[in-house]
Amino acid sequence: MSQSEMEELIKLQKETIESLRQLVENQRLTIEQMAKSHEEQTAQLNQTIANLNETVAYLKRKLFASSSEKTKTDAISGQMDLFNEAEAVADPSVPEPTLEEAVGGYKRLARKARATREEILAGLPVIEVPCTVPDEDRNCPYCNTPMEVIGKKIVREELRIIPAKVERIRYVQEVLGCPECKKDGASVIVGAETPGPLLKHSLASPSTVAYVMYRKYVNSIPLYRQEADWKQMGVKLGRATLANWVIKCGLDYMEPVYERLHEHLLERDIIHADETPCQVLKEDGKTAQSKSYMWLYGSGNDGLPPIRLYDYQPGRGGYHAEAFLEGFSGYLTCDGFSGYNKLKNVTRCGCLAHMRRYWYEALPGKNRKFPDKTPAEIGFDYCNRLFELEREYEDLDAATRKTKRLETEPAIWEAYWSWLETVNPAGGSRLAKAVTYAKNQKPYMENYLLDGRCSISNNIAENIARPYAVGRKNFLFHDTVKGARASSIIYSLVETAKYNNLNIYAYLETVLLYMPDYKNEPESIEELMPWSEMIQQRCRIKSKS
Image (cartoon, rainbow, N blue to C red; front, side, top):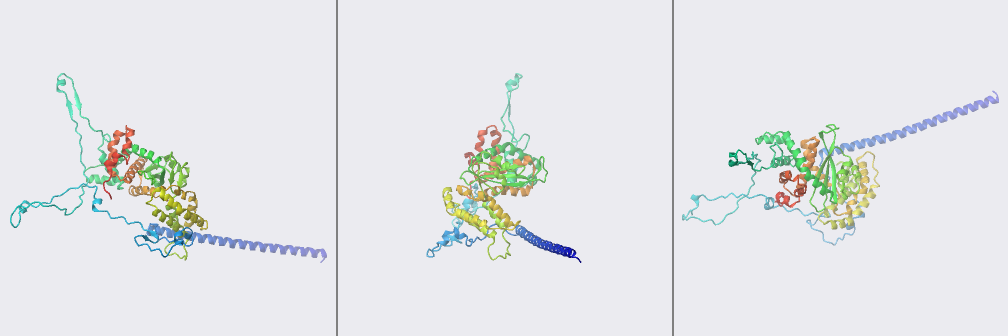
């Protein structure tokens, strides 16, 4: 073999060896990538399994466990010391408070005194039933001398209920005619003036319509069940008739009162807002199964008469709240719904109750296997600590409450936000949702510190939603848009009357009694505000309880 052939063979062998080495290296990289991909897939699957197990535990808790978020709150180890100066400088020589003064390191709220019978029954009329001695027993059994009354005593009291009774009221008009003019062939006839009807050609009266409204919007009794009750009372009134009464009177007579309440609400400094879904069967451009919304608005703890308003809208767009609150420029307390970002010239305040709920839903189950507190438990404890301070300041005036808050709560928030940055939850978990919600709400959560009248939570709006949610469970849906609108108006008057300590039925009846005349006198509608002197005299609950 020649020298050149030898060199060519060696070169070919080197190229072959290099190709084999490159092939081996590629295979090694492929194996490493596959192993890495396998590890990532395994970690992802493990996280998915963990998230699914967490969801199962959450659903079990929602179905079978207590729905209360209250737990025994402990101090957050290490972190609470940053702002809990009282424990750091505790003096053992100071006498311990009695059980009545403190429980668990915090002052216990005084137990509400039990109402006396007189307080419970203060608003009821008293009917005395005399129990007298028969005539044949009024002489002395020993000397037969007629005995004299020397006193009376109350032996017992009981309550008597008078079931609803339907009466047929017939207006009989007197008609006068002149006999002398009649002789001359003239006909002079004068009829007595009669009160106008609530609804033309209808059996409806202020009392019957108020009764139907009270039962539907206060007692949550659907109209089909009321139809059966009317039948039991001897009157065959179909649910369509009852619905017509409610819708017609709600829109014709109660909407002007509602609009005036709306005007008063926009003049307030603090408003709470929320929204809850509802269903309307017959709505243009939407299927019967689609969601509509009942928006909820209420005045805050500003020391003025409370206002509670409902606003039906076909959707959840923030422009609905923007339109309803046009002209308002105060503090708006709401949850984390981004639709409220559309509102301008308002100071938005977050809701600690919503934030705490996210931490609560991320809490581990009873069979927890963690020696230390989980991030969800720490976040939950922070929220509880703030709520405990708020309970201590509850009975203070607004200025003092603001001062107390600024002395104690900013340090807790600072520690909370610093701790939150150290939490790195797994994606898709409930803990991740809690952390994301908290970080998104950071710009709004401390704005309540700006005014002592502001609340740390949006519980006012959630309390407005509760009566509607109870009613919705019973009547399930609204048939028409008009029905949904009328319901929002009547619920508004009912709840505003309730929070102004009015007899709700009496208030509804009064509005229906006066509004047929007041519709043409807009300035008189102010007399029908729940806090007006006339309404307070006619409808205020007399009981002190």
